[in-house]
Image 1 (cartoon, rainbow, N blue to C red):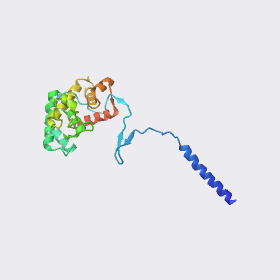
Image 2 (cartoon, helix red, strand yellow):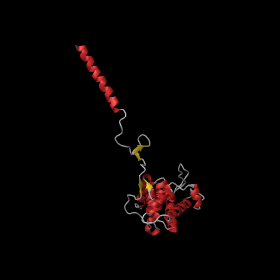
Image 3 (spheres, rainbow, N blue to C red):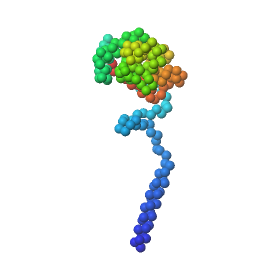
Image 4 (cartoon, one colour):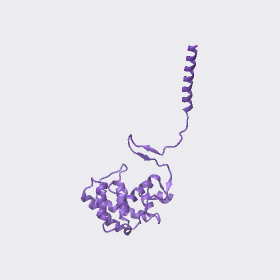
Length: 219
């Protein structure tokens, strides 16, 4: 009698395990993961879901022209920001970067704060930065783009700031208000032709634009 009971209990236990396994097999996930991890222990990185945007979530959107962003103490504000944001940048480099942003933003009539924010986002003010695609310097200009802008040395502070400012101006000439600044920045990342044709930008580009404009609003 005891042996029979023991056998029954064992059989019930086995069947319950089999049922649990087969019940789980083929079960659909309850939600789609929107984030993935680059490496063990790293912060989650947003995966582009394919959604398109035409606006960004930033208050005090900056104007397009030079006067929209220029203030008398702007150079000092830029230098102070660089010191905290990129402490490895030498003081003389910070001075040259700031001075040239003012000079060429005025020449090409673009908001110097926007150019500053773009350079911060692209290179963290590392004038020797090189991307995996070969983009160079402060504004991460591709050699082909740089050549068309009159830049012969992408690692030269003045030339790169000049080329970056000039390129931003050319982008702003392609997009109308009220989205001139945001769509120009989208075009800088994705390419102006696709942004203009589509009339929108991707989710990772939205984050890119927001980062730039948040920096521009801090100086």
